[in-house]
Length: 479
Image 1: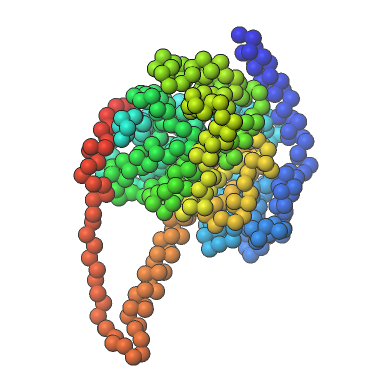
Image 2: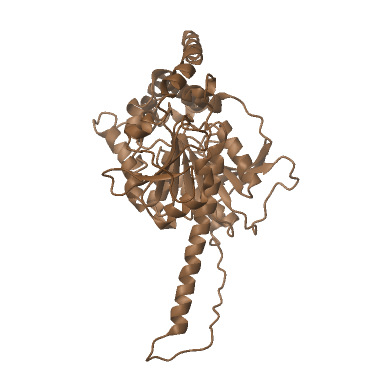
């Protein structure tokens, strides 16, 4: 009871003091954080008055675009940090939402990144979206769940497997909580013709725990089987992925391990946590650390008896930190006495361990005032975005953790998906046209064929007939 009282007092102090101090402290120099990182403003180029491109010194030509969103010089900056490429130029030209971010300013609670993040995580939201659940039985008899979002007014609860609508796979945070951000993203995706599906890990969000195995932080094995099931169910639709907060670790691990075989067209990270080992060790202030640890222990308390066979539950439920909970869940009894066990665990689970193998465009949307991720300089791997052509960082001055109060991030990610799809389609058409010209032109000394050949394609099944032996899903309806 005393801990709750202290937490309430801290929140009240933040409500009264932080918003005004944060706003008035940065109003005179809204671009100071970006300037410290080497991002500067220059006069507008070409025909866009609100867009400027600059090169960061000593970063091998890293391309940065900043915008004042048409709100005057006192508006915080939005910066797109990436390596120059044809895709980057295409995004700068066609993703106009990147320049339309207008955060809440003034003496208001939304000026505080902490309170904005707290609101998005804890405040209830009456969503008009309903969910149809598929419980997927995995190869080791474990269960994960896919919640397919459908409008409340839709009478037909199932989508035909012959539908060509794109699928949007949404991965919540690693604690399994479905936030306002996820529900609103499902609404936005439905309105744009997507089929949203929320991935729930073992024991998360009401998913039954049928094995003594829990999913490690960066283990993509369960997600890999879920993606195979999605391709089996919707073989004609493209697959896109969005991950929220600490859920970014799971999808980055999956994209790194699978490489060009991930079956994902493009992906977006909303307020991701990149350096996860450091984040577990010292990345959170005490009130947030205590709240997240308490929530995780409450979710695991229902399995206290069964987990006692493989987990030291006394150590688990007496822990006061996220690191202590992670150690109690996934360290073996023989590894508890090893000084390098913690480092060895993150060698297998660090999200960026295979980042060089990622073969699709990945957009990360972050805010400088994110209280969960921590300091921008030490928590964002800027060198990754400056050197890897597949990674793009959209950095805003304000927005908190998965906040972005105007839902600008949802519009930006959907426009990013559309732009990348159009770019690759145009590239494919140009390649086919070039190949056709080479085939019809021939060489001066060779034989020239004046007729055009027509290739026929036989459509192969998306999955083998053994899929029914692997997946034994149960269907239920949830609201």
